[in-house]
Image 1 (cartoon, rainbow, N blue to C red):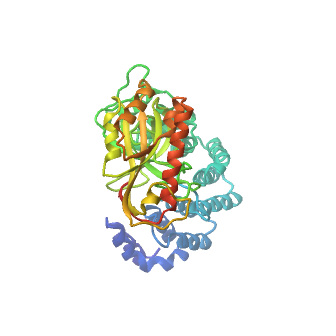
Image 2: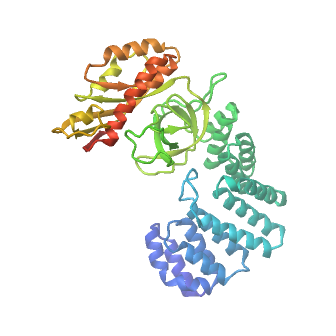
Length: 449
């Protein structure tokens, strides 16, 4: 690197503004295929700026120019993996992801470099690439990390990455051991302590989790036979993949599609809490479940969202979906006020449309002249009943609270009561409402979702 190039690099690196750094360095871009020192520095800057639009092209150019420089290969692979981490760890892996290119670099490097030091580093990079490529690569990821640590067990970063691999695969006790080894080598850094506490919480090592939180500056405690607890944390949103329920009313995507839904979670510690929002679609978690999530957000900014890791304790509540048509606003919402104490009446979706009165009444199968449109209000939601509340009392309260003009269906409640006849009537009512919503011509506006 000549004096002019070095001066340009030093001037760029003295800036705290990434856009200013790249503006200053743009003239050096052609030099990444001419000077290996510039290429390595460029790769390090790309790792720190993973959204850079030319990252993958520049990695490819630098590696093509200097295929025998191990430090450059490793820096290039790290940049690709950082770019891949812009995708949440709970999201599907797209074809041609940056992690697949990092994997190719690691595999090509393993065929070329033979020293134990180089191979340990490349195997760790290979493990991280496999980890980012999803569950089908899990065995290969574990094998790569184990091979790397066999060659060099002193690298705390590899122990940490190995712990991440086991954490996302749900092997929490193994992850806890790996994060413990990472702390022995790296010290009590915040990422190590947070992940050690997460894995310890999930694997039942409560005392270790509490100690890890305390070393991270978080005042945690735990009662006997209880999970860690940190007072005053508030709530967060945790996202979970969902499928359709088989009921189309209120659905905006096909039943067979898997989409994320964000649920409110009341925090008990920085990594776990109690779900307090019933799911709209079918999910592996629901209201009342105690869940573990990763405290590294997958959606940043003012409204952060965190990815689900594990269900720690299923809730004891019973959950029942309902569907209704009301004549006036909030008639269905008001039914929840009559429920026994502890029940939660959650309205997911309210929509108002204008339809033919016969269609609104469910008469959609027979041909008829559409009458002048009237306003119709559809409401869908979920009833949460604590385990100690009698379902019979709930059914009686709902019947008493329903106004005559409200068409209401909650079949699963009556199935749980083992009242087959009443469940059948509610299934029929649900079908009438749903057919009317799907088949009638209407002009709809959502008023609540």
